[in-house]
Image (cartoon, rainbow, N blue to C red; front, top):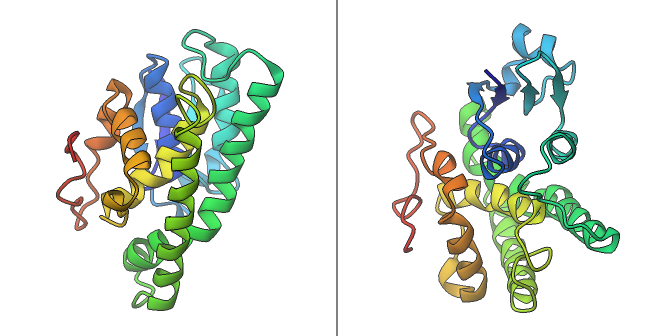
Length: 222
């Protein structure tokens, strides 16, 4: 059986999980706490990071974008990259936007302070970082709304890795109730649409011990 070594509240693991599910590919989830630097994870990836995908034939791929590109080449059915080069470039640009810019400005401030400090026993959250993350999140939700008002999906006329990159981050933040969806109706419509897809069911079933999800997290009509 295919394995995906992951952590439930990793946006990058979620991006890969959503992509696998959208392509109809099953994988056993093996959970790790990467900061513990376990011998098992170090053997799989010297960077001691998740996700790590292990195919049924033993092929091992690390790093979320490398995994997604691999999936697109090996399992081209239900394509998550558009056919035209310019359109593919736009999807990749947005993946980079969410995986780097959104992470630095939002996810690191909110998820690290509110979740990972607690899990790592690193002390109390810093309210200044939380305020900055919240302000930055609103800017990004405005951008998502701007995109979705002009396109069917974030990267173009059909669902793509751009949507799953964004949803990976936002679903983690939604888990802790950090997203003011009511202030951004266009972004909320997009998230409700992607949240309702069968591929999202596994993500909505996530539960971190000692950290229950927000009340509306699994509600498709939030």
